[in-house]
Length: 172
Image 1 (cartoon, helix red, strand yellow):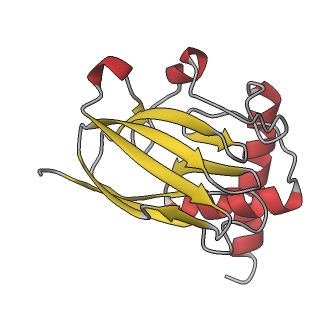
Image 2 (cartoon, rainbow, N blue to C red):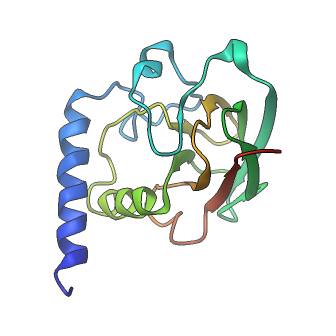
């Protein structure tokens, strides 16, 4: 068990490094001041927590504030399985922040990898980078019930508590 976590981190890092080589330029290395999901990123495979959504299917828009207290507002959200939502992400802070969807295990592994390689380039559909004073959007369909999370994986932010919870229920 003592070697499990280092091995898990190494496997996650290797997967991220492989993915980085093929990723678009909308990743951590680029740090654009405004980012929105692009049509190009919407062709990704479905994840445990859903898939990129179709903007025509949006039933609800959720405003999420990111700030330098390393918190999101709101920090807890509830969705219904199958719901497609549009996240309007605002960075009211003075430093870069991001909104990354995933399971807690995904976010923790990615956070550890970011500590070792903070400038790794990647641009997945489940992440949006937002510069200080800027905003971005994400459309996501929550196709599976469960507990999922969102976090800022820039070094030090996740560890400081910049993480939120999404509960996806079967019915309203």
